Image (spheres, rainbow over the protein chains, first blue to last red):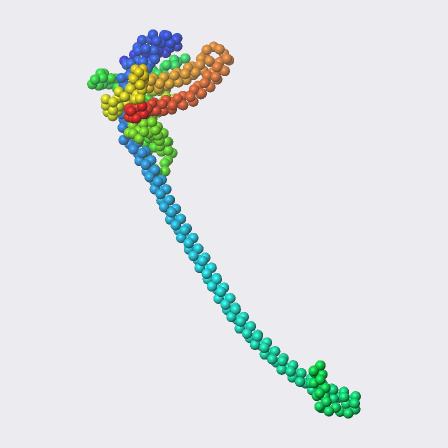
Length: 192
Length: 257
């Protein structure tokens, strides 16, 4: 059997070189080695066996393994995405709260500033008013003092005028003027 | 110069006893190079998938990324064609795709391409169509005839459409098997023919003229090898897509027609 199969390839080689028509005439199942049907049975049987083993291994072991990993990966990714979304929402809420806090603090500080300003203004006004009153008092006091001084000065002036007038009259007329005359003249001057 | 067909010869690797399988007759279970390359392909798939899923983590490693990439690719394919029920057929489509893809790629690295054996592609196609038929009859029962009688087609058109549908359905396993077989066979034959030209250019007695001929042929081999990698992927993909399409026909019978 083995000797036969060994001799046949040699025969095919020699005939194939001479031409395809010679190959077609070659005995033992046609021209192509593939059409030598005595080898079909073994090939088919082994192929079915190998395919069955391969199919069983793939269907029972490898495909489920890969499928499991792919599903696991998809699940991992989706949970991670969900988690990230949840964290995002949380972060958004926190940012919102922080914003509100800042807004509140700002309003508070604004109110505080306005309050302080009002208080300061009121105090300032009060102090200014007190100072104004004090100054006005001092002014009034000074004015009355000036007025008394002026009045005193004025009375002194009339006395001096009488004296001057008496001395002028005495120098001009040689005799002292009477006090009554002087008084009359003075009041006439004052009336003018 | 070796024959371009020599690479498809079945060579015995390990002699095993012939077994009498009831109903099928005597089957020689000796391991030959075709069976060996299928075993290697299955081994590669198992090792890669083991590496990809051994330490399956939510944050994947390098091999896991590759495994999940292929998984997602075929998973999207199955669910987009079959719909939400694609998940139940996904392991079958995934096994077909991985097994065919690995055999195709191994054919570019090893000496032997199992998918260039008609016995292999025909068995894969027969399995697929058998699954389609079983699923179709289990789910639709007697309504399976709707596969050949599209709804909404006037009766006089049905006279024409029904035979076409029946013929196209019967041709499905044939085209499924021959497409993969033909692509693999043709690509590898072309590679070997170009490689033969290189040897011929120096041994053919054309002297210095052999140098440009050999250079061109070698360039052709490089280009064809790149193309073959594309074809290797594409044919596995096409097989998976068509499996999904045929399954969709019977799973969603009457929904799309």
